[in-house]
Each structure stands twice: as C-alpha cells, then as structure tokens.
Length: 211
Image (cartoon, rainbow, N blue to C red; front, side, top):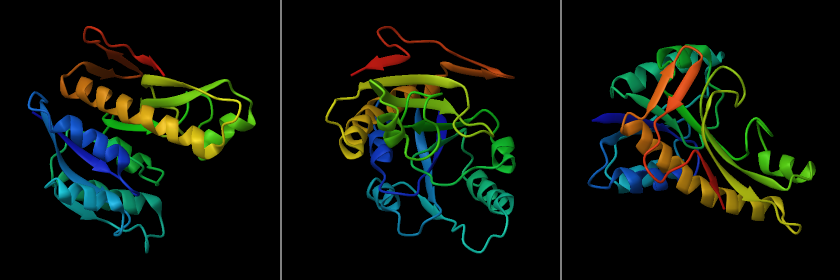
C-alpha cells in the first residue's frame, strides 16, 4: 500500500479532494501525514478532522532554503512516504529536498503548462488573452513548474472572466484532476525514469480532461 505525505500552506481544498479519493475502500494507499510551514494553515485542521497526523515546520528563522529543506526531509522521512504531494505548498523546493525524494514529488499548477508558470497564473492567462486555461499535474524538478507533465484539464476562458471567476472554475477542475492522478500513482500506473515518465491509462480515462 502506497504512503503519501502532503505539503500544504493554505486552506486545504485540494487536500479535501485528495482525502475523498483516499477514503474509498478500493484505494490502494493512504495519506500518512499532512505537513505545513504555517502553523495556522486550514489544511492542518482538514487533516485532523480526517484523523490524519499533522506536522508543522515553520520556515521562519532559516537563513538558507536548503537548511529548511534538509529539516523538512528529516521530518517527512519519519513517516516513510513513498510520494510527496504538494497541495498549495507556498515554498520553492531546493535540490536538497528533491534529491531525497527523486521523481516522487507531485504538484498541481493552475495553468496549462508550459504556459503561465509561476505565481498568478490565472491573471497571466487573462492578460495574454488566452481562450483556454486549466490546470496541470506534474512531477516537480528544480525549475519553476518545468517538471514532466502527467495530466491536464482544459477550462475555457470566458469573455467576462475575472481572475476570481477563472480561478474558481480552474480550482473545480483541479479537484477532479489531482485525485485521478493520485489514483494512477497508487495503482503503480506512473513510471518514472531518468528524464522520462510514462502513464498506463486505465480504461475510460485520459491524460487531458476538458471542461
């Protein structure tokens, strides 16, 4: 059974979607810990409500990112996770962290990567006049949202969209896409090698969803 650690900094809406999938009787895995760099993150409350262990490691007081990441690695390794899931974790991870969990860190980003990486992706899409946006689940590497793509969900951009309305619709797509990829990982359908990744798709599922 696969073990997943979740890193979150905010309200935990993607965490709730992941937990709904993990709680299914046929799901071959479990979330072993939810950790945050913010002691008041709502995601910690969500985890507690579901009986999931929580941990807090504030980034304050660390002069170097790699020193924080080294302590974060030690914290997570105590829970023996097979994969790390980023769910609104507002920290850039250094090679110190990524090397410890090489090829086993997932993130979801609110754009159709490689378009609009980084912060404020929804507003970037609006500013560019994009007709479509969406979200992407990808493996995390040392770049900014540059890791191999596992799946995407396409969300149309409406003429009257604001950053808030577009963000709301993309978030709804995230809540469907991320749990789908999580199940693929738990079922050992995602295979990662040096510079490559493949996904064995189950019947009726696709790597690109359209909304």
